[in-house]
Length: 169
Figure 1 (cartoon, one colour):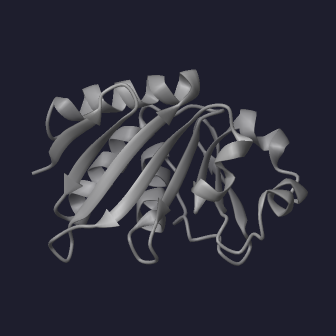
Figure 2 (tube, one colour):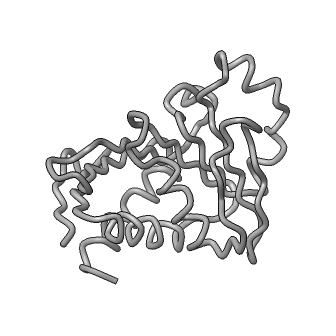
Figure 3 (cartoon, helix red, strand yellow):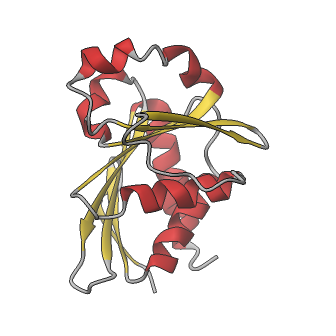
């Protein structure tokens, strides 16, 4: 069962997920709140679950093909029933300048954007939801710490927190 704790109700909150199914449930519930123009920045150690979370959001958005990590192509644009999902992996990018060179800025307004290793690019966005994924005490447990930045990011944060407070889906 998910355990929630509020770090600062205005800017962030943390969830302890004990199983991959719980983590996928959180991602699926978040996917129901996302719309074109929203940005989710994922961060965490290698193997913590950034790609797993992105895949679960993609499934929740209706992506039919499995969303694979875009580490080598750097970015994948995946169709959903309501637009597109832009999935970016910033791990191999040398910085913001390389990110800008990708020429993806026109896609941000038309797609839900998920960026793995997104903390490296946070300065490029006025509003976003951040998720720091850390290993928990149990082998399958994860600490999920969400933060909201800008008006839309804060709105998503509040709606997600309210959604999760209702209990399991």
